[in-house]
Image 1 (tube, rainbow, N blue to C red):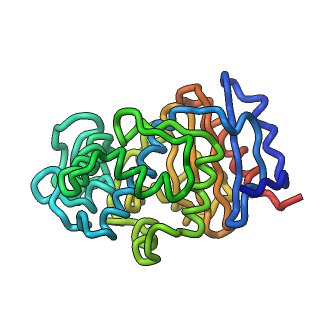
Image 2 (cartoon, rainbow, N blue to C red; image 1 turned 90 degrees about the vertical axis):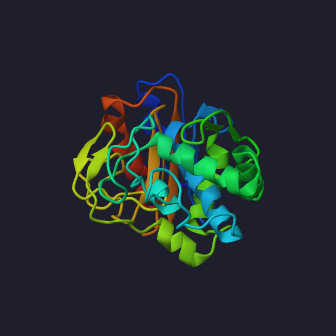
Length: 274
């Protein structure tokens, strides 16, 4: 992968974290790296983006359909991807009828993966590897446990995934458009660790920035920015307005420290190239 040190990401050296690695890419290659790009971190909920991409590959292959029933009665693959199934955050409790509330759910992503397994006959790790990781040469990335939060990877591999989001090669344009547009756009909900929003826009696996304030991305990120942050102190976003993706991996759990530092890194990632 081409590497061009055209942005200054050194502000992360002042962060109160044991380890940090970050990178920015555009469609042509990496614009900047800082920290050890080979160091493996637990992605936590960034894992959901990879699980979603693999599940959308399954949709295009005909293994499942977005309208395949999955989860609580009345819920589908589409509901699970958009955190609109009504399932609780981390249990099988049903807290709402499908399509009524945006309830962020690890369980929903796990049920989604189980549905792909049921219809394909393959372990989800195999489907993820053969459908996403191998084609993108993400050789350092592994799934260890839940597809909702169990992926481990490094900055270089996630920069490759960021380039896939910028210029998709594994999914058709109409599938990508659906992934990056709000599903059930009027639903309200809580963005964990940040607050309640009405509406809380979410695509098929991807949080959509919209006009949320506060937010973990930068004030300069466009409303069309999509991505995810993880409870292990990680984030990945792709902004189609500026055609860049930013990855940041740390090993300090998400808390108020992150909201105090992450937006400034996003602004650095959006800066004009030197």
